[in-house]
Image 1 (tube, helix red, strand yellow):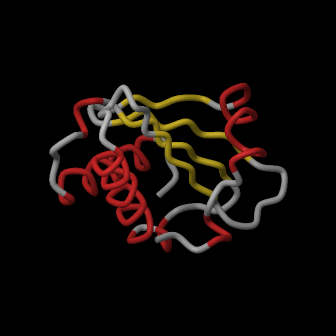
Image 2 (cartoon, rainbow, N blue to C red):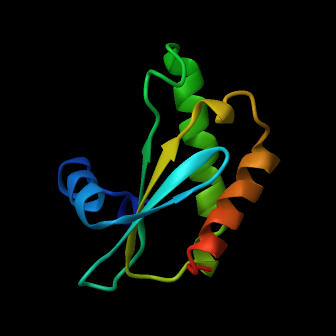
Length: 113
């Protein structure tokens, strides 16, 4: 699990990032990126809709896998950004290694590594 300083507050971040951010699409998820004025830590949010899967067990597993993949790369990620991962249906049933690789590819494509 990500530490609290690396989590995006629900009320504050998501709407602002949707308006101001740019999106990078990948096969498993989209990545919304917005810069912050205060360049402290990069914060992350995860949106896994019920359209992905009706079962909360599946949605929470996807969120945990994405969170762990981000946590393992925290030391490489540039500070001062807000990022939101938007899961797609294709992420269901993927292994941790596949998700981790796609997270790294998306962050590299966004020049955040």
